[in-house]
Length: 321
Ligand SMILES: C[S@@+](CC[C@H](N)C(=O)[O-])C[C@H]1O[C@@H](n2cnc3c(N)ncnc32)[C@H](O)[C@@H]1O
Image 1 (spheres, rainbow, N blue to C red):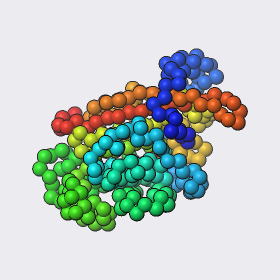
Image 2: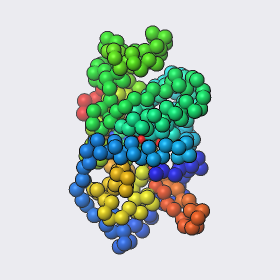
Image 3: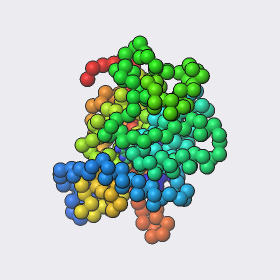
Image 4: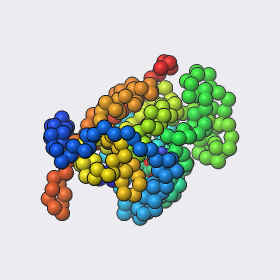
């Protein structure tokens, strides 16, 4: 999976257009360019594959905290106290932990379609042994591409951006002393809603969702954000070294692949990301390739990694699409 390090922050080690030319002129790689229909897998197959993945990588060794994240997305530090973040596809917590460290009193709601992943994330956050982190970290099960997010994150009137709050909406931690925001059982069993979140982070998660379910998944992220809220995106980019290593039989669609363990990976070009997010109603603030050259210490081979970095905002006003 991703092997980014802190030094990868906003790197421009090579020109993506030159890489594209090179790949598209290489006949041995032509099969990556062929148009093909997407082969879908069922949501339960997808989540089982991720559960197997997290079971296999259950040791702390596999855990790599994404320390560069706050440099890429400094808004996660400069935001107001008690801001709310929804980390989608939290895995073992590599994105949630730096966010919790970065801003005092920030609250992180973290979902995953694998209960095994949620267990790993809880263990990682507990292992840090900072009591306050535990109270600000709220993991929950959800496949956002199938069922969408629960109503306690944002009720129908919050999603429709209706100015008067619906009954039971809690917009600020100070209201009700924040007790509802921190008590997950109370939230899930009652009609309370936390009035949406200030940030949604989608870090190496959307690429795992089959292409045909991506538009719904992105619209769901839009619906639970507060007006003016930010969606922070980072994922695999087109012609990343890991894409070019897939054998022809691993292709399950155009730019879509399935690893031997059954987990899927899509490789994004900027236009696809733009179409998905702007199509859901977002304003594009930043969108670019991050191109990093690194050398494999064992064989001395140069590896060209490509990631997409994006920042999108939900408009302050409710425009009908
Ligand atoms: C590559 S990991 C990324 C984890 C984390 N965001 C990070 O920064 O390290 C992708 C995670 O997304 C989860 N996932 C994949 N499809 C999902 C879906 N449809 N709904 C929720 N989680 C999903 C997987 O279980 C996995 O834990």
